[in-house]
Amino acid sequence: MLVRPTIDDTFECITQEHHALVSGLLASAWLPTRLPPLLVQVIGWHDNPWRPIDRDPDYHPDTGLPHDFVSYPMELKLECYREGLDDLESVHPWMAYMISRHYTAFAGTRELEEFNEHEARRRERLADRIAPELIDYADEALEWVQFFDVLSLYLGLAGPRSTPDALPRWLEDPNDWSLAPDETELELTWEDDATLAVEPWPFARETVTLDLHLRRLTRRADDEDDLETLWKKADLDVRPMTLRRGS
Image (cartoon, rainbow, N blue to C red; front, side, top):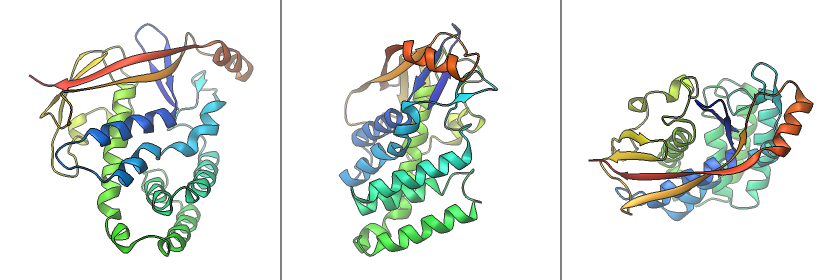
């Protein structure tokens, strides 16, 4: 879950699955390096394992909000990753292979020996079903998955209506992550909450428009039951977003 606190004291909740679909949309339109369709699909599906979690979000007692992708308890998060990757194996072995690599590259999972060993065994098994050229491409492909993952997170959490604490520290400064794997370095400027200027313009279309689908919570919950009630009553909303060429 992405949880964006806003300056009007509401909280915009975007599912991980939807955030991933947005990252895939951006990847499909990327012009400087036309990405292979299979990689675009990997990027767009990279958070599908979160679907059951985001359908019924867990209460975070420290915030009174749903757990987000950072605070969600690690043990449950790893269970989600394993089960989701098991399902993705039946979709395409390279997709499961790449998303396994993505999940083991996070700062919070890189040092988890048991999880990393389990996923290394998975990838070794899957490699027998994957064309050698895709295995050779995996390092570069992972860089693209990570780049569009972060860009989509930024679109979902940043903007003029976000509160100062809306972004994780590692996401706050685009200069830290806005260099794409093909060396395209983006300068991002918010014109308003629905418009982000991008320079140099890296997309095949003159503008990129998308809708961020969300649930809007109007307050913090008092406990788990209160969150369940708020969640069921929350308005389903859309935040339009336009990326356009910078001046």
